[in-house]
Image (tube, rainbow, N blue to C red; front, side):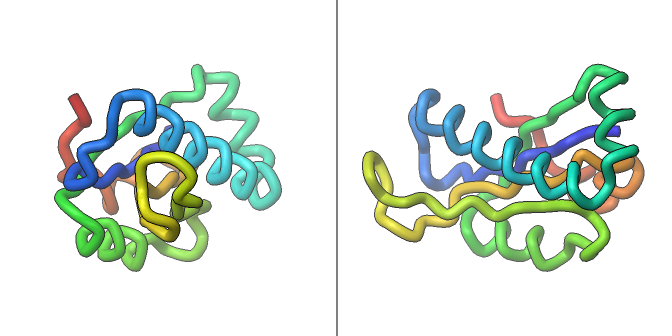
Length: 115
């Protein structure tokens, strides 16, 4: 069980802004998963609540990832309100899961970790 957050690298977010966007994605995807798959979420929490943050080149790649996520996998696209660094409506990241590792790896397994 894991959760993956996919972040756009082209936005060159500050560490603080990226942290906030990743937190939004993690929490929102978790909320969806908790309603849809409470047993999976309990297992994920019991086993350490693994989270991985990976990057994509730009908005086009982010949307491509979003469209490839099967409906059964909880996910949430984060769109910034534009109150600080970004223009309103900027798509920043996607939270995927928590869900089974193998299923998420089919979508994000080729993406590199954010460093």
